[in-house]
Image 1 (cartoon, rainbow, N blue to C red):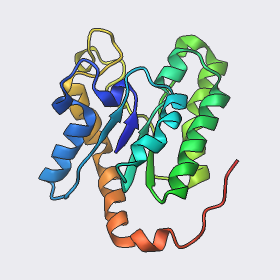
Image 2 (image 1 turned 90 degrees about the vertical axis):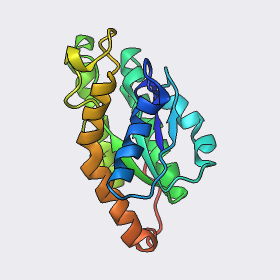
Image 3 (image 1 turned 60 degrees about the vertical axis):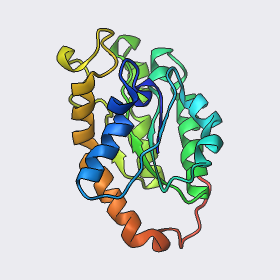
Image 4 (image 1 turned 180 degrees about the vertical axis):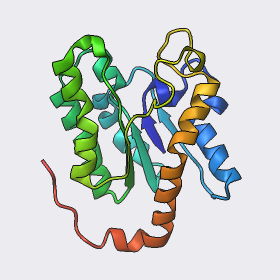
Length: 195
């Protein structure tokens, strides 16, 4: 399952060309028996993702890719609140024994160095704190490239989605392999709440 915003939902694209559907198709072609749920809601913030997490978990995913925070930054929300929301999502996933894969986001540079520095470091710090597989920037290779973005300059085209899928694919495959090989072992140690 991919829990995210419009970048996951596929704003401006068909559902079949959105990131989750394309990731599923590529994984299946590579021999993985998977179904990738699209739990993306356009305009969602990290708080919105946290609020609907219980609903998303009703589908009982084994792996949840977290793609949230872009709208927090676009709205200039307090990075500390974004951190708390994401931390709560990751803690709740651990409680439910759902493997998380965290993807990073970067704040627009026009918000100033103080803001974007605080925002950008949320993701690597949470990944270390929760010992998670981490993809540093969801839009790597796509952000700022007109040919890979729609007219709004923020949402990837079909070609942009393909770049994202190919970029994150090796990490997703590694996590899936670990889930198959070490599913019982990795939850043997009780999780402690991390504040």
